[in-house]
Length: 507
Ligand code: BGC
Ligand code: BGC
Image 1 (spheres, helix red, strand yellow):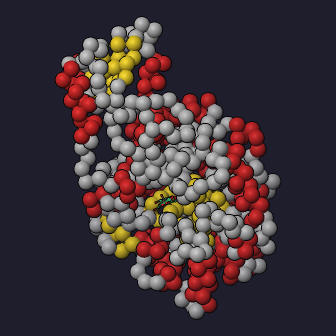
Image 2 (image 1 turned 135 degrees about the horizontal axis):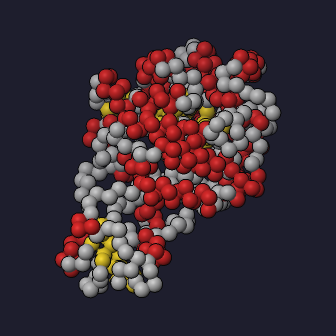
Image 3 (image 1 turned 30 degrees about the vertical axis):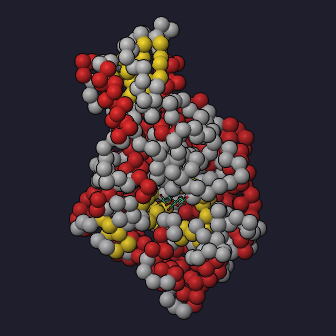
């Protein structure tokens, strides 16, 4: 296998040689990222349009969601890219934001807010390493993570995707994640390309509104929201996702100053910028104007959830961008710059030389070794807020332990959003795992009895009560909350147990 040095003359020459032979259509194909759902029934479009990338959105379905099923689907897609004239491999990407969370049987990790609470960069690096291992086992070498949002308002529905409110912590853990994901060498079969997101200011919107407006001066934007990117770039990040939000009323997807002048110019970012999900569609004007504005602002690849038959789909994108170049609205040099960035990243990953990692790697998905890392992450993420009368730790021999609360026996609530489906769901999800109730039953000594009722009934006479309360799973704007208090139901259970006089642990 050829030795590939990042940005060596060698890599430059290889990409230049390739680009000389590319048609405009082939170049624009590289800039197009279609959702797998949009390709349904017409995967041949990978060949027809020489697409550069395919993603799976949070709700995009595939026939078989086991690791083996995912590996089969990704292999079929790569086989199509091998039939294009230039045989440039597809860059396949997915949101593995707390482990490879779309795969039945993969190991799930705490969301970033939990990892932030560990304050442990070495641990976060291991988490990302395991995630990269499981991702690449299924043939996906690109992860839309880490999210380096600095969540400044807990009412924001994506707060749990943030490592925390402190820019220093976010930069440290963001770097750890990039290192773990990309591994010692990006060309390694078990290394995946990180995608740092969402650039920039996503966690600083007014009122914590998702996709909102970050109203702040430039000094504050740079001090709070930018540092995560500066360090991630230094750590070797070569892809960054642009954010839905606005900065002082102007959407990032059309923000030439922040995308081109600051990120690519001042910070020297040599990788490529991918849009968020249909995000250019939110810019003013017609689709053609939106394409022109975003590409001219510095966007290199566009994430397109729509297929033919619907508005603003990937065919239209290709047609319109081709027209824009021919009309001189989007300069050819801008296209060449975008394509060079994308191809250099593919080259740095050794994408053309990657082969299926095979059966052995698939067997490691969800393995006990990987789960041990998750267990460690959960343990270290726990935060003890209050321990009156030294109630904790509980003894294994506690007489009768009464468990209650909606979260006590609910694996879906434990996992949260981005778990198999975009929003996650309460109750049973296919990921397996142990509920708190089952774990307590396993942990107590033989003389201890564990009783359970969701609403707290039957607590009287117990020696200790454990109440597990919390939010239903959600993702993105569905999690925006004006009111952060516990639900009436959760409060009622806590009050009921409090009234019984049984010592209570609230989780
Ligand atoms: C989210 C991104 C995600 C993308 C692809 C968007 O809606 O904002 O975080 O990577 O969808 O699923
Ligand atoms: C997709 C997500 C995406 C979201 C954006 C959903 O339908 O599955 O991946 O983040 O839309 O609004």
